[in-house]
Length: 134
Image (cartoon, rainbow, N blue to C red; front, side):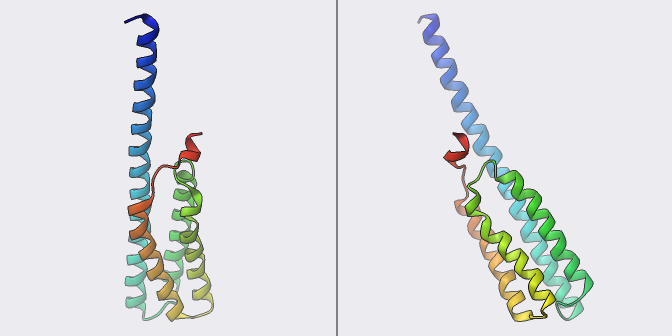
């Protein structure tokens, strides 16, 4: 094999390893971010059970923490995952805050269930976006 062929093989393996690394990194980041959201959802549910309702400081604080955590993780994920796939989760988190302010517990719990459903489905279809590689 000539030196030029070895260079081509080396470049091929470098690109191949880079793609594997980025897919593993993306998977770990998505799992971590979605685990945080799921944990916050369960904490919010527990706080509403303990405090008999959604209108209290602990629930509002947990929703604020959820929103902050999601925004932080979403910014990181935008480099690896197609952003439109994550957009709806952020919208539902904002709705939680609105439902607390308007004292609408039925809509609040419906939105919380939607968030938990998104977390479960996102784990199955989120993958690296080819647009982000280009």
